[in-house]
Length: 507
Image (cartoon, rainbow, N blue to C red):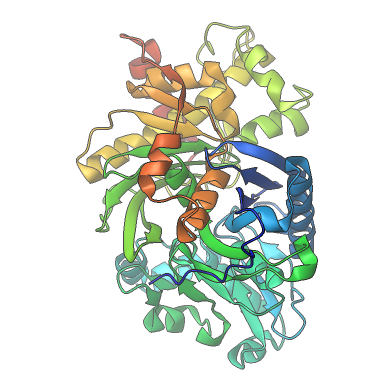
């Protein structure tokens, strides 16, 4: 049961009026201060470097993650005109499967973080499958054996850094996903914890018993001594050190970014779903208090732990979505800023049969093909950069259709509407195309930073800043509905062409 955190507010000081959310993403650290109505009162963000040591391998410097996140927290407070004493609590949400190992004594990372997108551990996954372990992982964790998840990343670091395994066995080296690392740093090394949603993405956590699984730890060769304590998502995790934000603040909400967005979108009833258009694209459907096993290449994952209950979700993980627009900008130089892509794409009525498969790091759900590679198909002499920009946008919508079809088959639920958020959800052209391809209305909320908002809600509910989930539902306000065209040519012929193009990119 959640214990209420200590109250540092004397009777003379006014009650806190904000919650601070730390949103540590793949390319950007953000911090947003929210008021009681769920609207931002101050925010800050900072990009940090991506490290590509070899093709398909992605790393981050954990110190840059920490520095950028701490700085944005301070800047967001300043932009809201707020101080630590004005905060009821802090919520943390994060890029999920990225693995960090650090020394217990010094808090120093022992290596760069291996990022969720990295395919460097694909050979470990192949070996686990050959050894016949796939079904065991599937049943206990709800996940497929793939380089995406953190377990194989821990194993790689333990296998490749001399002496690290024995230090880890003695509890001298700790593992955490990004949330755990931030909690460790924020509490001055007093707390080593994570929440159920992040733990459920490691390949080491049993989503039925809600504990690290000894059989899986043994198969993976990961010592239990390294692991954080797994707690409910809305819970008293610890308090920040005085010196960091100018006062102690309780950390009472933690969830992986996609689960936090699902909570922030108020997807509280089984069958409600959201899709986040970020670096990757992630669709989650609430399946209630029981995990639904997927037969169609989706993941079964923990949504959140709240008030002594656990909510489960089906998830379709698409590795490259918004990152395709970054590649048009940085890799090809077709656009100077990501915002220009909508205008460029709108210069043509259709792609004229051009398809863009953005399998830069393989394909995620529902294909799980680490060997697939990016491809542009259907080019003719008349193809222009506008066709390419439009095909890039359409790839996000088509990949989402792949996932929704699988989700409806697994759950037996036909989606009534899809809630959307994330950077590319601001793109009206894309959202209309998405509705047309899915044949489902697309609902975009006024507050599109639903990832940070979900973390704020989980934190605020633990300290009674909000009373219950009805407050979250009440705060959710529709910005715009995109209705599907009655007879969309993209829905049938366009999607069939997409499926053929995907086959060409496989293997």
